[in-house]
Length: 358
Image (cartoon, rainbow, N blue to C red):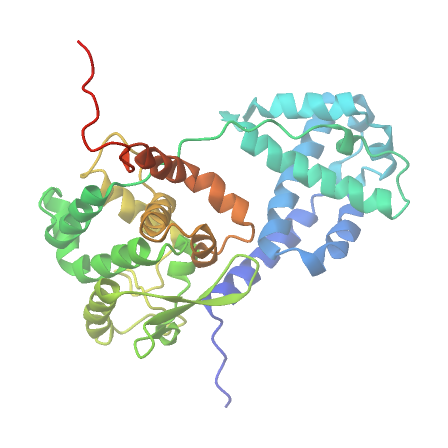
């Protein structure tokens, strides 16, 4: 009997997204199936699923607030309805998304959330407009919400050291947390050191398999956003932490289907993104209460440190996997300004400049 091939993390995530997508499609207007088949070649299953959820919200809104969709069930809404909507209809929908109630709870969307919802609508309209099945494209007339740039939150070098020390000794953990810490300390040190020492995304971290780590070249093979593979190299501190964990990992019997996973939970299953987020929150909250530290903030911390050391924005963009260097430049522009300020007193014009007057 042939052995069943085990999906890797990314293949399994893709499979789950496809199954969820099929379920959502059963509730959407029938023309949406044509649209999602049309964009399948150049979008990821994760993107399509996010679009499907956002489009369902849009059609739910139309049924509740727009007379053109008051009568038919959602799946029976005809494509012609999209031609009857105007720019004002879409702007009213986005305004409604700022604050609305669903299943007894209030839901809010900032400019980023509304930007994603408008992007889904634009994609839907563009597909049918370019296919000449719609005469109008009101979504293209609505400008993207203006985003207010958020301050980049990162740990300072001394905070990084304190964080890793905290993971090592667990001195500030509660009695109950210490019980778990005894079992997970080596894994936690390796995981946090890897995130801080490479800047990889949390999804890339939990997706690592044992065979993705190559100590001969000092690198890990990860799957980037967009599906392409890349090798990221690590330094001595990461190597030491990973070797310590690998020694422990070799003695763990994983659950069926999780044999290849690098980082395992206490249930011997591949760690989930949410588990790593909770892990980072637990340790970081003992280091600083003023900053909300997430795995992505550890990524920002690494990017900042790398830019400070190299002053090479293109290297930082490449290592972090940014497709557009302007994304990197936007995040680390403050560091460039910091270096320019240091130039103010770097050059002396006279050996004995006059003293400032009282």
